[in-house]
Structures are given as structure tokens and as C-alpha cells.
Length: 395
Image 1 (cartoon, rainbow, N blue to C red):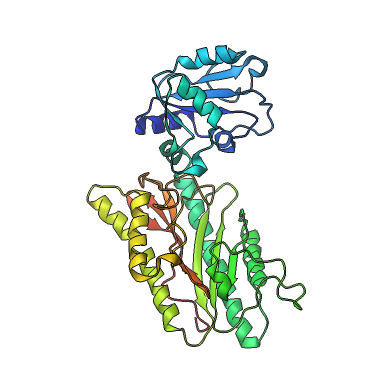
Image 2 (cartoon, rainbow, N blue to C red):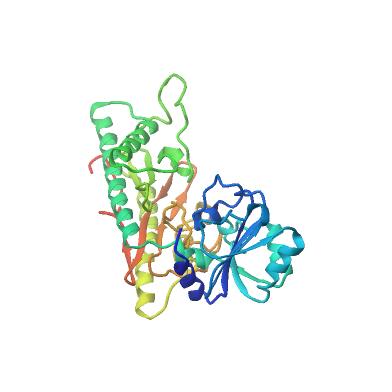
């Protein structure tokens, strides 16, 4: 949990009067996480926790569970029924309070409808807490940034070792399946002490055209014990992997290879398209900062999307440009998104996010991904190396 003063700094930065949290039966995991509350405490009645821009926080709790928020600082106010609850909440009427409800960003909208209507009916002016979450959970301090960069280096090593196995398979004619490379990456994670919320994506050929491809539990008939597709010549190979140290911030990268001697011109051209689109973001941020301006996630997505639309079919573009990264891979900070969950939050100091344009076709797909962190007013690209050329059997 962040300190109350950290919450207050965010509230003031967003020009709000306070931040209103509530929960019931631990249904709102995001609220529990932000406040550092254990999931096993008894919570059979609604509680409300209000952090004002100044002054003591207020804990509004049911009389039979008056200790449910004992781990948090603040003044305790108890209620026994709906009317006494409404009386206590009415004291905040007219104040602009951040709540976990946003008209566009669903992942941050965890406030239940019943509570929203209750607060609104009592005259509390409810505002999206998306900016508050970004300023508290969705930015990286020095410690988290260091863990992020260390994780990024391990991910890069996992890509290189996996590609070495691809090359070796053609040298010694050893069959390689998607699951083999996925297992190799996971073993490297374990060796380095990294954890992940999902195994890496390893996709051969047409499977790379599925942005969220999952390696199946078995391969083609007759390949008992082998998982996924077998590696063949003249295929696109897509890697997408993310991991973190247990108390750290995630890193998340994607690389692309090709297993043929001659790269088809269509693959080469499309690869250059996604690389060029990816590399529009950092210079645009730097230019805006130099001019005393700040871009939003929405604007960054539009920059990339406009370029892609000028160079490929609209149907080939299936997802936003990027997502926030923090202690969650898909974090609480700004997303580079103007079409799925339009994100108008600014790229502030400490913001960390992916830049991962992808284009997808029936026979293959191409996605390149880097991470950018805003450090001392500069967009810093994470990791020891970013992909500029396709991985080939000669590299």
C-alpha cells in the first residue's frame, strides 16, 4: 500500500477533494490491493474509506465489523443501517471524490453500480480515479525501475537462447516444437528468479497471426508428448514474453524471426512497417517534452495507428499500441490506446508502458514490442537491445 501522503499528493495533483474507496466481501480486488488489505478478513458489510486532500482519513464501517479497517489510519465512524450510513456519507456531499469508475477504462472500473448510485444520490460528486491510480500504483520509482530493467535483460537473453535453438534445429535436423521453446524460456525465468502470470507466446507460421495464441497441450497426431506446432522452414516465428522479479515491475517484449534462406518481400516490407511504427513513439514524446507539452496515451496510439493505416489494411490492425506496466504486466498506468479503451491520461514522470504495434494476416502475423519508461523527463527504452532486423538462420 502507498502511504496516505502519497494518496494525498495524487489527489492534489488531480485537483480533487478526496479519494473514496469501498468494498464488500472482497469483491473489489483492486481496492484491496491499493489499500493493502488482506483477502481473508471478514467483510460481510459495506465499508467506506475516504482519504481527503487534507485532514484525517475517515473509516465508515458497520458496527458489527468495526475493526475491518484497523490496518489503515483514520477516524472511525460506525453505522448500523442504511439510514445511519447515508447520514455519515451525506457529510461529504458536494465534494469531488475520485472513485474506481471510468467511462472508458473498464479494467479500472471496479466500483459496483449499487455503491455508485448510493454515493451519487447523496450529492457526492463522483470523478474517475484513473489519474489517481496512475500516480500511485501506475508509475515506477527508482527501485521498481531497476527491477524492470533487470527483468528486461533476462527476457532478451531468453529470446536469444530460444533463437539459438531454432538455428540449431536446422543445423542438426532436430525437431523443435513451440512448447520446447516455451519451456526453455520458462526455465530461464526460473533460473533467474523471475515469475510470470502466463507462459510466453511462441507461435510458428499461421499461429503467429493470432495475437493471443496459446501453445496447445499437444502437437499434431502422431507427435505424442510434443506441444504445439513443429518448426518448419520458411516460417515466421513470433516470440512474446513477459516476467518480473517477485517484488518488482514487469518487462514485456516481442521479437520476430524467419526460418527461410530468402525472406519474402512481403514479410520484409511488413516487418519494416511495424518497426517504423514502433519507433515513432519515443521521438514524438521527446519532441512534445521539448516544447513544454505532454502527450496522452490516446495521442501516442493515434500516431502509430495513422502510420499503420497508411501502409496496411485496417483489418490487419487488431489491437491498441500498448499498455501500462507496473507490478502487473497490464498495469494501472497510461495505456497507448485510442480505440479499445481510449486513454486520455498524460505520460507523466515514472510512466512505463509497452509499444507493440502488430499486423496480422491469415498466414502469419508480426508484432514487435519494446518498453518505454519516462525518466527525468526523457523516454527511456528498456533492455540491452531492441529489434531492428528480423532474426534469421544466419543471425
